[in-house]
Image 1 (cartoon, rainbow, N blue to C red):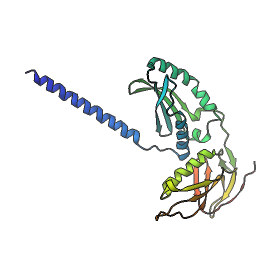
Image 2 (image 1 turned 90 degrees about the vertical axis):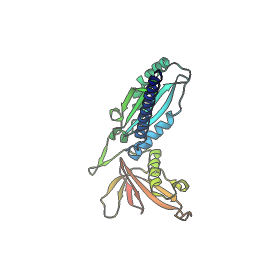
Image 3 (image 1 turned 45 degrees about the horizontal axis):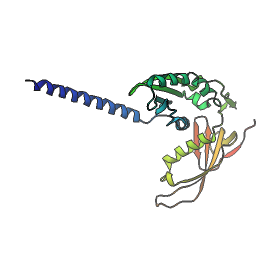
Image 4 (image 1 turned 90 degrees about the horizontal axis):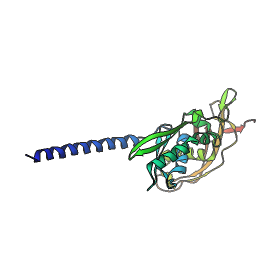
Length: 250
């Protein structure tokens, strides 16, 4: 007579454990879904994540970095042996001035403002449970360059070399047969240019010239080929034939 409750308890425990595992698996699947970020936004997020990933000052550490749709979430945890209360006080004090320093760091890039990018910090208040500490929207930051109009067409701020190369590499990963073996040599980002392609109106922006040597389907290198990559805000294009171009008057 005493064994039935024990069996029932084990059965209930097994059901609860199975439900927990199912929920955990569902959460991991949702987290693993690809995010829909423009290439330059994802590159900026990855650069920011690389700077904070694995940070640990003995009291507070970065436990996880999550890429979302136009958002980057940094999750803090107590360091090994540190009290949760002390770590929580530290992260709150640090984040109190974080928004101002983030916005003032060389000016928030304009493409992050225009895409509504957000930077979020969370703290682990209990094992596996997080609460938001601070959220900074790039759109709320001041001090970015005003948009310039030429013949009624926008000329956005010049992308950094790191951002431009990141976008180009992301493009090549999806277009080359063997990206990992490809050899890439690129120029600096040009000054503002007007660009004219056949049968298209004149456009404005910036260009990076790249020489690319990639392998063909037989595993042999085809030799260096030159490509031109056009940037202007969210606009990006690979150009196969050299475009007509000239400097924009400052």
